[in-house]
Image 1 (cartoon, helix red, strand yellow):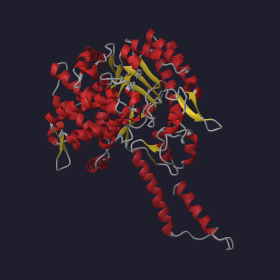
Image 2 (tube, rainbow, N blue to C red):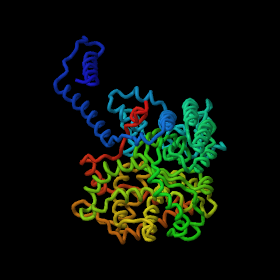
Image 3 (tube, helix red, strand yellow):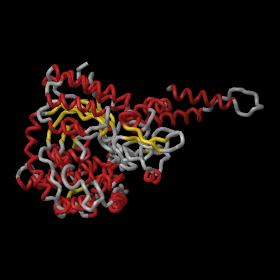
Length: 561
């Protein structure tokens, strides 16, 4: 009998003995039925939590350590230590007091799931609470006061209220005020910056050394542009780190506030050389986008990098829910327009997701005669050009509404991810027609379709999940696929091509117009999971196919301790 169940039985005996103020207090016998009920409830909680944990397949993050110099190994140790401080910083941003929450949780499995989710809300189940007594997740996470309304926010005259790097709180009189990130999370940022500076001491690449120093400084003053510029100037560095407040997915109230995260990387130099030549096609791809000329006047930076990496460590926001398999940064539009972006393909994690998740999904959900088209090279290319597509299209609205990111508010992330997905496939088709990309186009399209089912399982609360649902429902309406009587799906390649072009044009126009009303309508109508699809996704769950991955990672895992 576990400790939790024993406690419940003792409590039931005591409560039975204390009934009525005037009765003699005698212990009453607990019936066999009551004991069985308690056992069933206790076991059900354990079974439910274990099932939730089992949604994640564990993957070991490592690389070929023998290729690293002694100095590089020391740099990696300090980089991992620095990124580890992003965990408590993100905890405060997304929830608040981690220890207070864990004290409320008594069983070990629920605690483990709390750790996985960085809070009491299930990121793979539309952020539903799984800890008793916890209400719905606030749309603004812990960036804003829980009782703050949108009307109150709009009315306040705080100049930096929409800054990516401030949180809002109330003073004793209840009035809103802002706190800059570097002050709010100082106790984590100071030691993180110290570790980055220690890493810089051992860094052998001069540009990387300078980047680490600038990034350490940025953590302490929230001025990230100089370090972003330096990051884009680095070309020959073998090691890399992404660290700081970067993506704004967690702020589902406005999409203003960015979340702390960290990723430690080792560049695959051979793969990166193979990918580098694709950057030259960016201006031509921008020019050929399937939208009116006014929506493609911006020029993408041609100094962008396209590289492949092994990931050694994830922390903070990057370590939650569906783990990223590619990165397109920096998000600063000023840096993008001047320097372009760096596209990082996380090869070892991508391979793990392909093997453990995508192939098993395809074997169940794709019609048998098309399963031969599920290829890792196609998965890699689709993912890679998704990230490239973030740099294409339009960032500033054509009608004076400012940046698309601001105009589309809380829906920007979902629309931007949807744009990148569909434009990525469009670019694959363009490059394939030019002969710059090899293979059968059916490989790319079939693998793309299977990947929709993989990403939908992240849940509608995730920006990528919403983007995938919009695309699934749009494709369905356009006949891009057919559901067979046996529950498998067949790709209709010609119609999928037409749907790909028209959806690309629609999303680019919505962004360029800053059409908040149009985007809201699209999300409400298309960003939903139909009943039939829910049933098909349940089959994947019943087959125990993982939804995503978690990591065996760290200094000890790498053998660097």
